[in-house]
Image 1 (cartoon, rainbow, N blue to C red):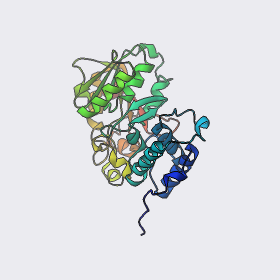
Image 2 (cartoon, helix red, strand yellow; image 1 turned 90 degrees about the horizontal axis):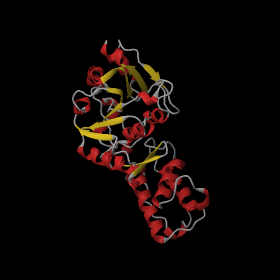
Image 3 (tube, rainbow, N blue to C red; image 1 turned 135 degrees about the horizontal axis):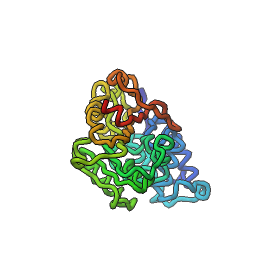
Image 4 (cartoon, helix red, strand yellow; image 1 turned 60 degrees about the vertical axis):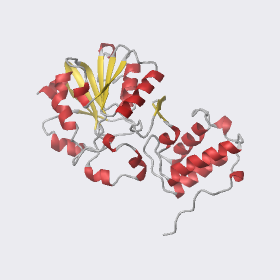
Length: 304
């Protein structure tokens, strides 16, 4: 197989943002880069990479399309494309930021790139499954990573206090930065430790949300190169993907109020979930981009 040529096109040939967007899309296709870490196609990824590398707003592409770039800006874009196409670095890591539901979050390779469909449900205040959002007073976010879900929970359940846990000290540093950036430090508290065990003793919750490591062992072995940049401890769920979900479900009822709920993401692992928990009949919730990736379980189901 012939080795791919490096990005060596003369910088003088690509003068405008329009030029660089076209070039970026072509390079992504030529190098067969993988998407799915915040974007799902080459055009959206290219727009994200080019505009944010130039500190331009993501929602104002048209006015800038024919803007000519300084040589230093073109060099910056060429370097970013090298990282994206040659090194297979996910675009959020190149930019040190990810966007979800219109909110910006700081990211680094120490945290999973925000993309959980749980975010969509939080922004909608879990309607219609939680009839009175104002009644939600305490929320726990387990495996918080960047803190994105904890922050969205705080922003959209304004009467709730949120406790967020993670085993990674590096992840909690990023989470705290994001919490401060979104001005919710008075309502979101981070705790270092293993899942539910890190939560304050004796505290009960109206809602527990969790996007745990759930990728099964066989799938982990086949992950595209882009996903290998993410921390494996945030992805790997053991042989059947249920290694962390089993203790979570075993203990969650003890941390929930009687009318509380557990909102859990399991990706494409429903067959493994059904096999591991045949006695459970959770509510499966679809979102705009996912089917049977999310489930909602009542406290009484878990306790029984």
